[in-house]
Image 1: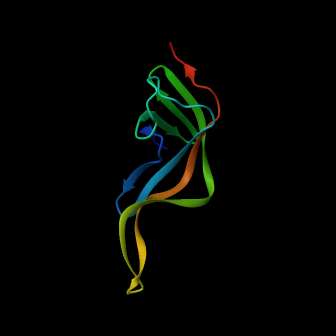
Image 2: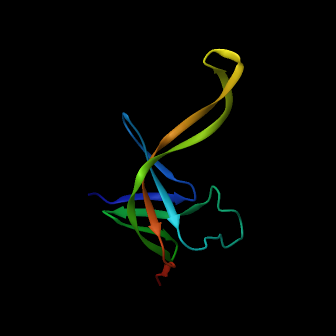
Image 3: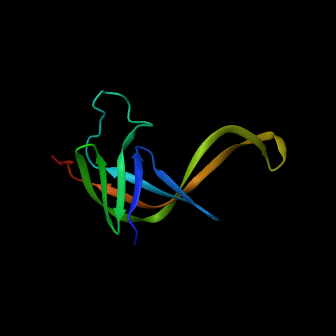
Length: 119
């Protein structure tokens, strides 16, 4: 299979394919992750995610995490609240939230070791 290269963030990443829902990969880091300047992780680029078969790496500067890709037992859907609502089954007295689906999560990249430094 071809090598995949993505910028990894704390949140799952997505890749759209024409006619199909976006492919989203969940990233699981089994250690402490923090920014050097102490800023929040949310919305920050964690590095470049590369997948080749079941082997994955997450590289940020001289640090590289090595991990493995694993299929989830049950797929998950990545949803976002839109802040909008609409009548439930046409009844204006009952409102339901409108959600936006970003994609389906079928796999996760698991990183269980400390990063390796490359000099």
